[in-house]
Image (tube, rainbow, N blue to C red; front, side, top):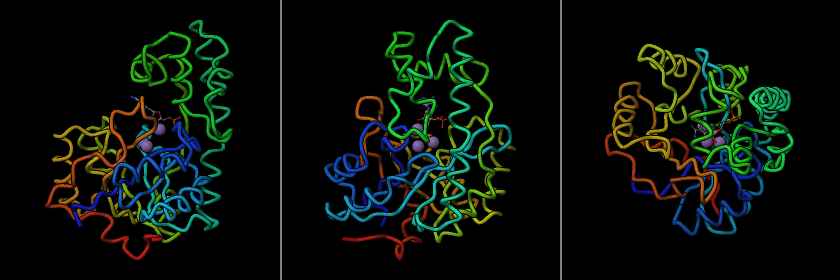
Length: 285
Ligand code: AMP
Ligand code: MN
Ligand code: MN
Ligand code: MN
């Protein structure tokens, strides 16, 4: 089970990836992925296309999403796997979570104008595949296009993050609601890339224990966002908190993403893979 090539975190142009759901499926399949989930940000509009293509390519599929949550004054991402994408409460919850994105994007553009970067809203919009889902990634691509930064990574160091031009405070879903939408639709909730949040040990402990108390069951251990040392740290935390472990590339684009679909190391032997608990939810050809 540890050796299965599962990739349970990636994005299409239904959120801030650049490939269609069909093209992401084809790339996953080509790279040997046996169990796949498309986890667009706050959006499940690509799920039926992803599932149908996975079935045609002979890949196991789990419906997926990555929900933006506000916790301890930071944004945390919660991945949902194996839920029913037609369940009304998660459909409505995600629509509400997406709701403020356009207003936020206009405010981000106004803040960029303050430092002399004009028309960033219109510029970012050129990269948007889904008008309901304008994200910081689309702004990052525009700032690279106009030569302000060399690549999106540099953008997030100099712009769009806390204290930098273009950053706008935003209230996302709360942790309890996000977990309940996923669990209520029959799925498993997973803390995405915990190594990325810069939490103090106390804040991280609070995230893990609140998440568990709300019914969360899993944590990403091997992800494109973690260092090798973090694979080890979060494998230990999965054991300590009795959480299932997940694995996913967080692939967005062939050139931008340093981790391709299905190419990460296997999960460490001491954790229980999240897919063991999701066997009955896997859609198979
Ligand atoms: P948003 O949901 O609009 O806040 O955008 C978040 C997205 O921005 C993430 O899912 C990543 O795709 C991207 N992002 C955030 N921080 C970074 C970073 N430091 N480097 C590269 N991409 C980032
Ligand atoms: Mn993203
Ligand atoms: Mn994320
Ligand atoms: Mn992601």
